[in-house]
Amino acid sequence: MKRSLGAEEWIRRILGVAVLAGVAIVALGLDRGILTKLSLGSTSSIEQGLLDRFHPRPIDKSSDQMMMTKSTVAGAAQGPVLAGLSGATDWINSPPLNADQLKGKVVLVDFWTYSCINCLRTLPYIEAWAQKYKDNGLIVIGVHTPEFPFEKDLSNVKKAVNDLGITYPVAMDNNNKIWNAFSNEYWPAHYFIDATGKVRYHHFGEGNYDESERCIQDLLKERDTQQTLPGGIVNVQAQGAEAAPDMDEVRSPETYVGYERAQHFASPGGLNQDDAQLYSIPQHLELNQWALAGRWTDQGQIAVLGSAKGRIAYRFHARDLHLVLGPSADGKPVRFRVTIDGKALGVNHGVDANDEGDGVVTENRLYQLVRQKGAISDHTFTIEFLDPGVQTFAFTFG
Image 1 (cartoon, rainbow, N blue to C red):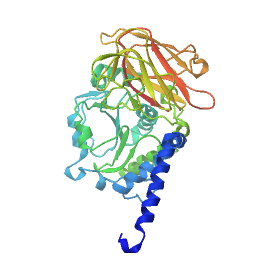
Image 2 (cartoon, rainbow, N blue to C red; image 1 turned 180 degrees about the vertical axis):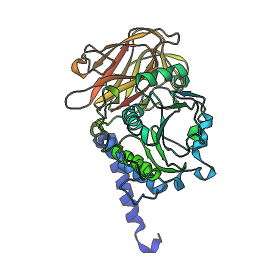
Image 3 (tube, helix red, strand yellow; image 1 turned 60 degrees about the vertical axis):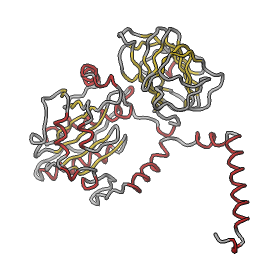
């Protein structure tokens, strides 16, 4: 702005006042007070708006769905994305499937991984659709693309598929080849493919289940205009970790324990990467801060407890708290006890802990430790491991 306009000095003064005000807000902690009043659920529309702004998607005018057509799928022009199924390292519940075998079918491809809480909560709907429309030309394929190393183990995934009651084909995507063929970036992600092999719609994340089922119905009607489809929309009443979250009360983000993606770590001295360290928990934790106590070795994706009586504390705000855990490297179970604000869980225990907060880590998976029954507020979660060797990966909330 030209000096002759006489505004330069006023602009400097205004900006100076704004900077000082910002410093005062941060110093007094008012910024945290404002941010913690925002639920993660309430920001999802803002996030989706930003995605739409920078990666705009055409809207299917025939319905209310806001889903992406094939023309906007990165890499779709390079060939049918179902050809990427040839990159599967193994198949569960089915012999290998390829694009030619799926010609003339409506295909729903679900990208998931078994320690992902968002994926787990969508699975009852995916299974219900697979059963409801299996005689009408729908093929559901779960593409299991791992996040953590233990999710590459075929026996682990087979057990998870059985425990979760999944009956449709599951392709193991240990080398991310199917993921890359779809140019996918999310867990969970659902791609709806018509009978000609074209990706017609997609949906990322949880929710919008009614709209997704209507997509399936529309594509099945296109495939065969003469057939009569089962009526209505599925009504799923999921239990345990698969139950729908209370997103209005989720103010704590997914939090990784390994140093590559760790945030908000509060133990004095910070994380000591790849070497054993004796940690302690500070007397006070702010919302979403976490800390370790005892001798831990923090690695890129994982923290391993070196001696018994190690603890993790987390100040959180959500109905549900989950922690991805594994037993010791030699497979020995690890006992634990969970408290909330120093007290036993009582009725607020999750499916993997009892009223006293006791439980055992026996396998690599997501453990639901807290499900609160009453009003939700800030609490301090503490888990104490009574045996050494536990492997810890990430917190998730719901």
